[in-house]
Length: 319
Image (tube, rainbow, N blue to C red; front, top):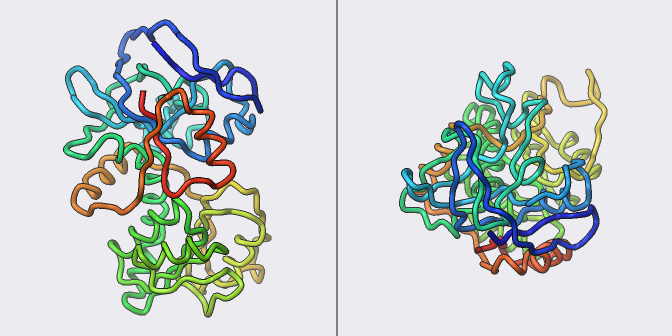
């Protein structure tokens, strides 16, 4: 099969011919239809996760299974033995080996999946268009669910803030509008992204330094020092700050350091049931995002474009 390999950290991706993967006991094989290109794939190339090499990247995967038909892959594979996996939280398993990060992923024509439970039927969703839901869409979906309790408690008076109106933030804005009655704000330095946030349903959009008032729920899809500091300063008492972005920000925590009884938490990917919930949600509520499909041999170009921000929506590789 044709595949794209990362052979060295901080080096270009290489298109290679590989032997087809072999299914062991309990494994499943799929023909890959599409694989989204995600910022986490860039972090893999940069060596942030210490991935084993050579590795086939890619974790936003759709494909075709011989019996199930069109499917989406749940990529955060856990050890399936610890209490986190037993309670369905494989995405935070300490011994997890995620597809595209620690196991071979979807930048290939074929992919091995360790169990059928990691395959979610796609229904009538377009497999190329749907591919970014597997990570970007799912990560924002779980984070939004965390935000709902204080928003629903406050009802129509609730105020929600999305920091970062890029790919994940644009999903978050739509989920907040569809799942709550909150007044939804978006913060981003880019005028184009603020305009897009308003098109997607945000009631207000502004640079971070021009925000007004406090918020009951804040989802930080950037996670840098300035964004986290701003989130803590702007969250209401008994509100929640949810950190999603990987830009390394840190804030002090303690009585008096944050508003009284405000909750600060991280949110990581999503569960297997949440992936099923999201696909059903996307079938009921068509989500707005643009997808540009590229052939597999342009994977390195896709990565470079993502690094420079030369992407209007989501890039998806098609074998």
